Image (cartoon, rainbow over all chains, first blue to last red; front, side, top):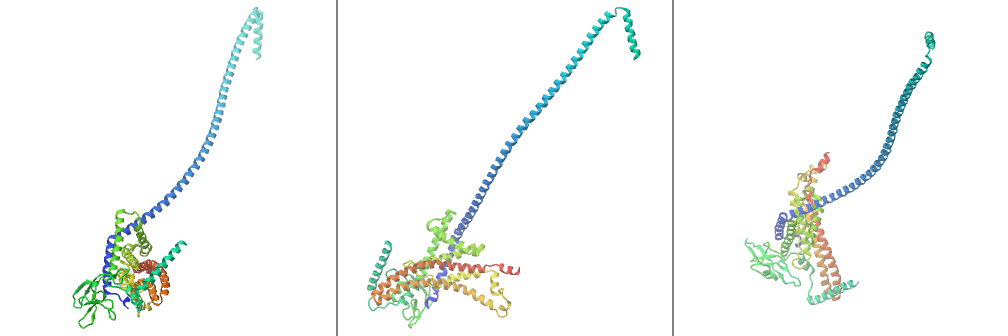
Amino acid sequence: MELFTPEFGLVFWMFVSFAILFFILARFAWPYILKSIDERAKMIDEGVEKTRQAEESLANAKLIAERYEKEAIARQTEILREADRMKTQIIEEARSQASVEAKKVMDAAQVSIEQMRKEAEARMRDEVSTLAIDIATKVVRQQMADNEAQSRLVNTLLDEISEN
Amino acid sequence: MKRLIIYISILLIAALMAIGYVRTEVPEGSKVNPTEIIFEHLGDAYGWELPFNHDLRIPLPIIIRAEDGSWHCFSSSRVAHGAVYDRFAIGGEGSAYKGKVVELRADGTEYRPFDFSITKNVAALIVTVIIVSWIFLSLARYYRRNGMKAPRKFKGAVEALVDFIYVGIVKPMLKEKASKFAPYLMTVFMFVFVANLLGLVVIFPGGANLTGNIAITMVLALFTFFMTNVFGTKHYWKDIFWPDVPLWLKFPIPIMPVIEVFGVFTKPAALTVRLFANMMGGHMIVIVLTLLIFIFAAMNIWVGAATSVVSILFSVFMLLIDVLVSFIQAFVFTMLSTLFISLAQEGGHHEEAIKE
């Protein structure tokens, strides 16, 4: 059958034409086309990957931000609590210090009062004794006007000494 | 609904026109010879038929080497309609070389010279080559100018097709060797696809049954055959002559090697016949469906009219199927070529796995 026997001329021309087509396209067309397609595919893949990463990091960032916020709030309350505690502590300290100070002042005052009292007492005692001596002197001077009395006294004193 | 009515009325008008045509063109007594018409349309020809006129043809150059070794080149119009130019003519009825240019010897016998004529198929081949190279050179130029920017419209569609084949078949099958064989495989696909589609265009510059010609598919298959075997790895050759089968299968009677060697040659044969038969079959069905009108019209005009409606419907359907087939066959041819090449590119992974 004619259809099943390849015609030599057609085989020849087909070989030549296809070889030419192949060399033209392989030299001037396919490298550029396939390179562009490959590069674009690569770029798209990378872009998708980058987008995914960006989304991930964004979500991460959000999480981190949330965590920071929570932490900040926690810290804030803690700080406030601490401040409150410190305030009361300071007040307490101040109060106790004040009372100590006051006590000290009071003690000092007491001491000085005691001292002054003692001093006054001593002075008074001095004065009283001086006064007493004066009075006694005066009394003695009046009573010892006579010698008898004098000698009696001396005797009495001597008795006392000897008794001792 | 309104549209459907319009379509049906168009079909009816077409059918009526067909009747008119049958009446004028097929006079009483003349017989339609379906076989002749079918083979004329499927086969090659000197000169390219113009639409609506069986006799008017675009002349194409005939280039032949005569018996005495001299070269002759003349227009096909000189030997049209049985004319004899110099001592060359086209073999007529009863000739051993029917439809081919023959040299008439002095004693009346015919000699078939070496025929390098630009026949209808060769012209269609050249048209296809020009169209394919124009499409892809322009696409390449676009990329060189615009870098990675995606093309739009026609170029975008072409790129989608390229992407479909390159990323769909070539890359996954050949992997890192894809860039080495991609130019060939892409060229094969685009050539076959464009040739298939051009074959479906009824008028010039289409209509040639190019991929339905065994010479064309044979050359394509031979290219794949050479690509497969020239670049075949050591492992590929070892698998053919000393495959991993029990010893008695390859020695002393080399059963498996013989089968494998046979397989090397059946692969391109399968490629050749598959594409050729599919495309020829598609063309043949459409022609037969069209011829049915004339065959039935010769019996009875009304039967012919009825047949024409059915035939046209079926022809349109078949042509649409053929558009699909054009793509599928180009795809299958490329896929099988890629498969054969990739099988010959296989390294010793398989073997290593067994050793481990």
